Image (cartoon, rainbow, N blue to C red; front, side):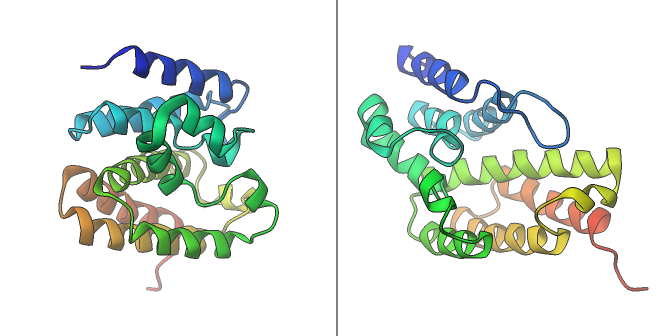
Length: 192
């Protein structure tokens, strides 16, 4: 059962991400948060995990302090969001993409299964959008991307390996595995 706390988180996330859009499509960013939350709920996540899913990008993408988040939603939600965050807005100005991703992978090893469920749902949602964009635009979309297909594939494979080891073959992990394979086929040309 979802309570007024969930509604508060939904309103908070919607307000914080107002004006933010998904890459390549212009779709309101809240669609990603809702899709991630839906996957968490469908995988049996509780209200705390669902709230973490709604807020999982707020530290990375929006001017939200860690204290503000903890005060508004408590330590359990804060921990999930922290575990999902590769770097907050300040850290993003100081660290390279590679530094952020490697550090995040290292921290994921100590994350709770609840946090890993939100991370898995986030990766499924993000990679599904990327695969959809590859179907729409083809590999040419990487001409304007800050990351290459090989870099993204490396990161998704590393995350998948960690999630599979910790969460087993849950449907969300199986779905991520299929998406990684589809992404590889569409974006990374294979030698013949």
